[in-house]
Image (tube, rainbow, N blue to C red; front, side):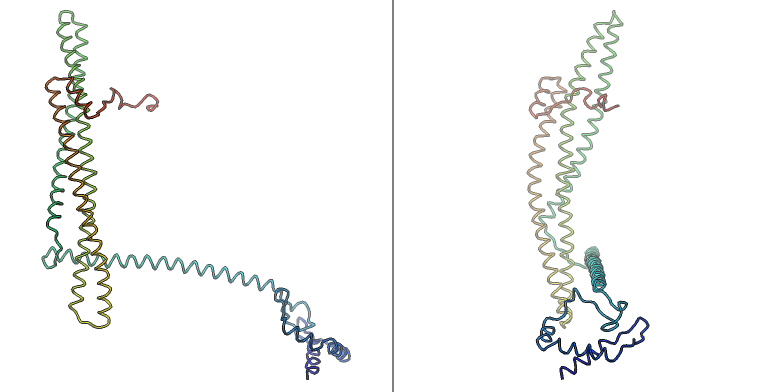
Length: 356
């Protein structure tokens, strides 16, 4: 049986097909002789070895024209490798497309959550304004916040007036300097009034010097008030705004949960209630955390404000008193006490190299 199969296979192997699909002519004797040779060359051991080992795909060609056919029907395995590489590139392109699609879906989900949150907060805010919604109130904390806002407005007013005083006083000092220079010039050109012009020139120069010292103290006072009002207080008020937004979100999700709890209890509603409960808990923790942050910042702000204003008000009082009392030594001592260093005349002007 095995011999017959081999012979028939050998006979089939020897039928070539040319490029046009026509069968070639082969003498019958030659085919039988070759079949007989294949019969005696292949024994049972060789067949088992071929069946066990299998073909080597790395060195195999696919023959479309059958055994013994022409080279036109042979497809090299390199073309198969090329097609597999093309498939790998295609799969990587598909992976990149899926990744970008995942990012787009994630962004869409963020926008969706933001839209839902905005809707709930807007609904809660409108309900509160019309008196239909319940609002969480911390009376003590909100009273402190109102005091802070009022204090900031008053300190901004102090800052505005102190800056106006600085500008007016600077103009007066410049006028005194110009007046002193004029007196000094006339003292040299008017011999009959030389002493009188000279006294007035010295007086204006002394007032100008003391005025510049006082301006240094006032500028230090203005800078400190500006830092306190527009940086320290503003930072605390930014935390207050975050706290107020968290309070609104907390009330919005609390109202949503209460509304769901009052409705029917079917499978869909129970799932929505669980989701609403989770969101409510998240916003509750956020609200409580920000409330604690605001409380701590208000406490530290009050301590810092008292310390800063105690120093600045003492400086302002001593400097103004010493200047208008004509006590130059006391005025200079006040600046040394608060570590204020005056800039030399012309320090604010750009240098020659900077102007070039």
